[in-house]
Amino acid sequence: MEKLLLLGDEAIAQGAIDAGMSGIYGYPGTPSTEIIEYVQRSKTAQERNIHRKWSANEKTAAEAALGMSYAGKRSMCTMKHVGLNVAADCFMNSAITGANGGTIVTVADDPSMHSSQNEQDSRIYGKFAMIPIFEPSNQQECYDMTFHAFEISEKYQIPIMMRLTTRLSHSRSGVATKDMIAENELKLPEDKRQFVLLPAIARRRYKMLLDNQVKFETESENSPFNKFIGGSDKSKGIIACGIAYNYLMENYTDSTCPFPVLKVSQYPLPRKMVEKITSECKEILVLEEGAPMIEEMLKGYLGDCLNIRGRLDGTLPRDGELNPNLVLQAINGEKVEMNLIPEEVKGRPPQFCKGCGHIDAYNAIKEVMADYGDGHVLSDIGCYTLAALPPFQSINSCVDMGASITMAKGAADSGLFPVIATIGDSTFTHSGMTGLLDAVIEGTNIVVMILDNSTTGMTGGQDSHALDRLVSICEGLGVEKDHITRVNPIKQNHEALVELIRKEIAYNGVSVIIPTRECMQTLKRKLKKK
Image (cartoon, rainbow, N blue to C red; front, side):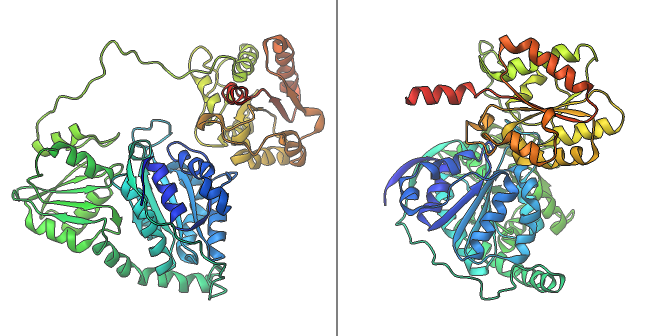
């Protein structure tokens, strides 16, 4: 046993390596990115030849991980919460196919939307799929739970969800490791039709999933990660989930919490433990990061016979992250002085890096669009979304990965002219290609600008699947060769780029312009290495 100082993300990764994982798949997304990056840097992973390459998107990652499970090996796929929307088709159906080798879907949620479009709680997806969910409270549990989750996955032939949140993903603590175990041997499923979801097979598999719900609940009752802690003051009971348990205990570092506490880190809810705390206490305070999932479930179980407090009734804020001060305020019913940011610390909005090629691309777009007015440029998620802020204020949408092209198509279909879509190179191969195909099939009058910085820039510079492939991909999708243009977005080429955009706007069909200049940050790192 050795002790390592690890991020929550890194503890998951180290746990998976030590638990005999053979492959990890995912698409970069804060706050989950560091899981795969840790495996990519691991000497053990290199020696064992553990698969650790990035996938094109979260759907392909989930399907590849399930394919490795089909072959009997242990696998993991990682993503941020909105990435689970992309992977949802495979995720939901894998609960019915089940697993062969142990497989874990690790999802990092982002309450307070530090770098996300929404605050969705992935536990709701796990509950919807009716699979076991693990929600660690600290880095040691991140590591230990990974071992346990693989075991449960193989015991019941079921995928497992591991749910993290930003603060746990990106904070460090000491982690005691275990002896490494060997990888599984190749072993195909005993039922060779297990993964064939024809209706007759799917109905039988679904009944099996339903029959296992009682067993999953029993596992939660006996889980080392769920525990009931007695308290002398029964006026209040506290149910604390995942990292919210840490927020609670930070208020009692020098003493014991006087109230009974139920720590929940494995789902489904341990019903007997819930019945114990609700029968002993006059009211229940629910501490959970994200949606009021447990609070709603308790109201369903108990109706109005017990006072249930939490995010639903306003005892805790309905949005944003919890913290120790908010928890103490909810316990005492009194306002607690928050640790405010000093006035001297000024907020600084995010901005393009100096020398970024996107700056020159948007300068050209802004000059052309001055002739047409605001509202003609649709975009999506990446560094280039910063063009929504001053001094550019050039884009009019950012909904999800790949939505720039499809929203541009819909706007053009409605009669809006001109319409420009801006999308990054990595986002294009993630989920923009199918939208471009739709536009090509219908000959939609749009200009698509693929802003190629030759990396996945927003999440730290991971390899992009689009590298040196964009022109051939666009040709393969059917864009006319004469209307695919790669340009170097630098100041000297400003007038040429402006004229090119104007020319392609005048063309009645699909045009693709690819301003290509390497990300300044990855370029700096390369030069530093040299």
